[in-house]
Image 1 (cartoon, rainbow, N blue to C red):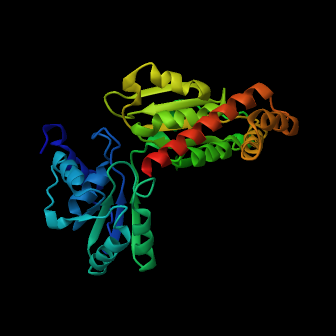
Image 2 (image 1 turned 135 degrees about the horizontal axis):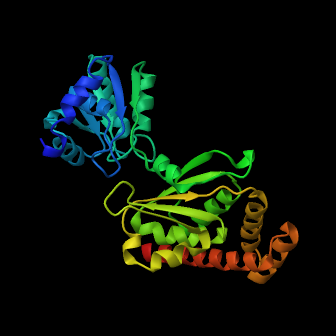
Image 3 (image 1 turned 60 degrees about the horizontal axis):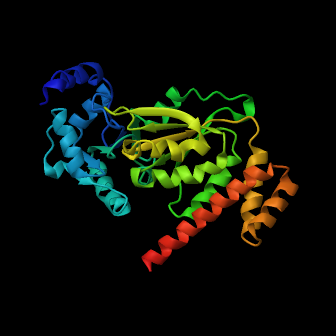
Length: 315
């Protein structure tokens, strides 16, 4: 057992061991998003007592369990990932029907939140078996707690978790136009190899504040708030800023509908008309500033061209 966690399992048993853990139950267990110390005592106890641990990646999970001093054999680890979730669910259900307790973990964070686990939980519930959640670390709530995203009115209060945006430029730009219509706090996730593309897509949101959380809970954690239009320049200032996993929070805005409508109208007009004509008509229809619409149109054109180039490379 790692010396750092030598007292964790006894503490977990003391704190959580007297609680009820019904048999024939799937326990969805949130695990740290980077910092191993962000595990709960109840999660440690369930991972140790479970008859088997279903997991997104058996190698990753084996290393995590070993760090906590939890010994599970290869037979006690069941691979359940995005490519086999439906089929693997049958194996998990069979074990549950035998009275076993199964814990499920994704590689980091909470199962079913932009990770595998939702199909497994649904299949278990359909089989008439119990699913019990063990909450824990989350990049979404972590970033919300640090961003200081304060809504100016009731209509823009609360937040929505969007997850990953589409990878193709044109589809991503359409998704961003929909985000512009939502006045609430919005949270998207992105991988390091696509963060520059996301920054370019979000540029059309102009001065709307964005908080970017990079490598949350890890040694090189970085949290920065700046206008959406400045994300690309901020990333370009330091190559290290494009490394790691990202959570990106769009701050609420009191009046979002007009801006969202303008982008949506502009996108529709650009599909049929020259840029200057589309910008003029979009400005006349929505009342949005022509200069900002022209900048947004150029960005949309660049994204569409990038998407076309990617398709040519694939061909």
